[in-house]
Image (cartoon, rainbow, N blue to C red; front, side, top):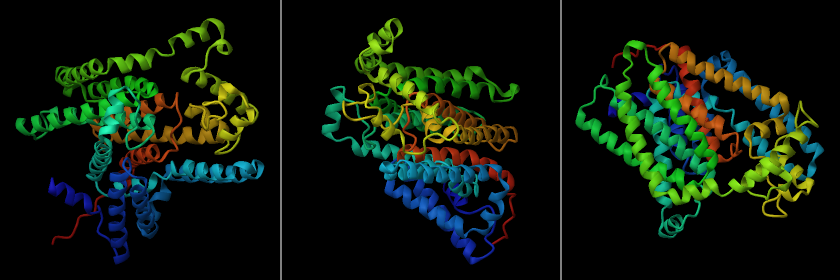
Length: 451
């Protein structure tokens, strides 16, 4: 383990100058700092990101290699488009300039994942370490937030986002951690890897404990959108592990062990929290029934019907400006200008987003921005599959990344928290992992001189 950590600290190439060496060490420090604090503290994560940006600016090798990548130019293109669209919208809707500038910055930051990707690509071991640091910091944040008062509220059925404050993002990150633990368990159960049964049992036991923690966190978030998303993401893990291997290496019986273990964990959590789950799932069944039988206008306002009203408003408003949208940060002021009680919760306070990431993207950035985002996502997906075909990416990383893509895709149907720091930093790491595997193809190993 110590050898793995040592190797991850050293770049693939030998630094050609003292400046290159300083750049490498700043990048490494920033990467690990960013990973650990990404789901724990915005200040620590921003410090790590700043160090990586400084290191990238000093790296001549990065500026020789990154411009050869189409994804790099697509990221710069959409950042430039967001900046231009913001200049236009702030001139048009001056009353919301601060919100527009802040959201434009957050939109742009979603597409700087090439910065951590560059430092991840320097050593193959860094990817595993960074993912471990991200979820370790997240777990530490959960444990640190569990004081007596919080536990008492949770036991009474209250929603909680613990150290995040936002229950939905907290639940989403718990779901992502569960997917990571599932793929890690499958890796440790593979007899082809050099693990003793004792070490394997200890590791799997710790994994089960961690999975119980994150599953409980997923429940207390009471986010139905995330619950729906993980129901689609879980099969993606098993299907990828089963069918992603060559035919001669598949062993369906071996996958039954983690599958049955996970089913047992799910059954335990469901039984312990059935009252909370059932209340959350069935509270609006009557309202949705009225929507189906009598129409949306007749239904009482609740979480689901608010969303339906917002989606209808968003579509109608977007059709007024289909190509370029209304600009970053304009949703809240346009919702308030509508002065519709169905778009206010509580009454008098308009929603600040449309509870649908796809609709929000096209509403704020128009078809032009939406197409650019779709191109970036499509290119990232093709990178994952190409890295797997060229054996730079293992079936375990493939299962983790594909299940995360499914989780994001389904979750984005019912919410839009993608600009919050704790979701944005998660995305930067996941996207950076995808890009890092592709960048490794363009970074041939250089033998190090013997010491």
